[in-house]
Length: 225
Image 1 (cartoon, rainbow, N blue to C red):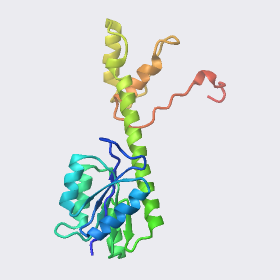
Image 2: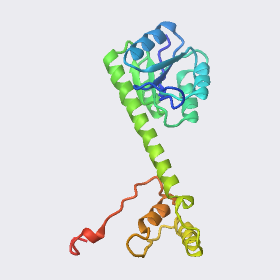
Image 3: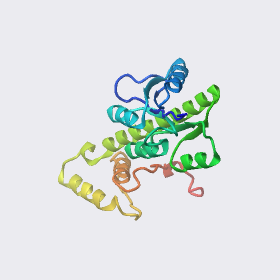
């Protein structure tokens, strides 16, 4: 009995639903139809595939927020398809569903990167809660990536006004120090763009995926500083 469905990441192409988009991969038509009906009633956009290969083809054509994946697929089993999914998109959450809910299978699935492991017959409310949680995390991650991309575009060298010889020298210095772990002191009068240059250093460094935390020391008492 095939029992894994894969719910994939929110459709960024086309018209994504408010709840999110889900891909169900299961070789049993009854399981696919049951899951599709349940999820569509909750506002999800749902696509289905009867084999792992068919599911991978759909993922190559569009994006999803989550995948529900059967563990016991014919041919290439769910664990092998899970590996293929993460090779395609390492952050795509996959919930595996199976009738063979042994501890060993659950551990294997989680160690291989599955977001969750659900045994048949599933509890509808529990499954929906797991789906909402996984889709919510996926969308939050996507928003974070988009925000970082926008910040990097805003603070890269091309978007800093100034093409004079002194500014070109500053850009050269920023390029030299960005990959260094040394402390950098920026000096200049108020309003000259010290924080903009600091953000450019941060966003062109190996630490660009870590937080940039400005602290206004002028507003701090000397003793506290």
